[in-house]
Length: 208
Figure 1 (tube, rainbow, N blue to C red):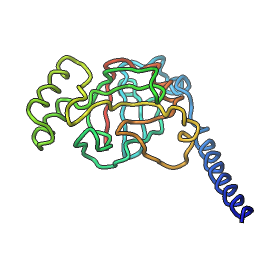
Figure 2: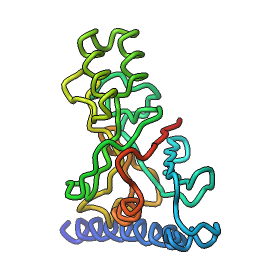
Figure 3: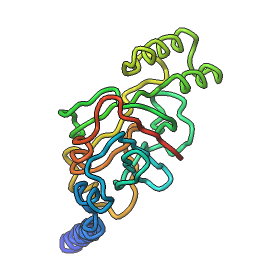
């Protein structure tokens, strides 16, 4: 009996080790940012734009209109297209800006986005997800170019972040595993690379 249990445990460990090894092989083709810039004949990134494509699970970076490179990404646990509250675990769709940068976050680094923006608030008010007072609070923060307040039913604290302490495992999974609160997660190494060019006000477009 004990022998069978040990055999099962060993089989499971070998299976997961194989998955990680396969993921390592898949990720080995990723080139660093400086090499990507050289291949595009771009000396430095100007007018950085970030496009998050939920359908292809990618974070793409552009210098102006020139595509530079992309990062593998995962999203919120809930795959619905429309985000209706701060607790629904849906990654929002829309045009945002980086409003805060936290380099000591539990997920390594965190670029908070300006979700909910004015469009999100207007649509939520129309659908009855928030009331007029909540709409006004979001509108005020938007006009001040501040991060949205967390007190409304739409919540906030949505952004692009790393993986944190389990980076080695999750970045090398050869399949998609959505696990965030609605934020966009990329590997610690990639969030470090992104941190070298991202600043407050950087434009981020999330598409479906």
